[in-house]
Length: 232
Image 1 (tube, rainbow, N blue to C red):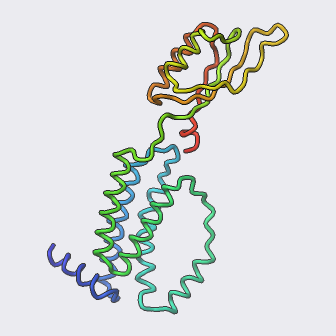
Image 2 (cartoon, rainbow, N blue to C red):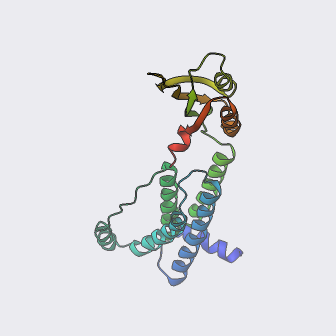
């Protein structure tokens, strides 16, 4: 173990020098660190756009970039030729989450460090990034509460200030604003209401929906949380 770490330190100090052993070590280190990055993404992902292929791509990108850096090491002609060859490729996949872009960039940098035999930078950098990612996940940093949402329901009749629906909204929402009310004209009793609400606690959405559905005359209750919709 000490011999392996000594070779890593020496390679980081003297810079890239091609050999089969160095290439294998670079690819192996890129694979291990890419796997760690992929596991972190899998563990900390909480959106609605999870993709198994994206997780696997993080590992492949790290190893491929490491191989690219080993290929162009010390050769400007090869670097220019490889740049021209890669310019032919067109990537048409749309990255929906900016966090995914950050993980792709991490994979690229880790692969570059491993491929150029800056092993200490690759290892220490990956560990530092892992700690930052875990901190952001465990602290729930950046989460905005309360949540904005759209509430729709139909009611047999018109709402009054003391109606059970209004009581429920005051109980579970910090604020609520009526956007529209359709119906109730020319003898129709059923009115469709649309409200923009600011929820106090998104974890109690099901309880609020249950109380609304139990109110007399209330039907077709639907709630759309804006923050969750934006993650699709």
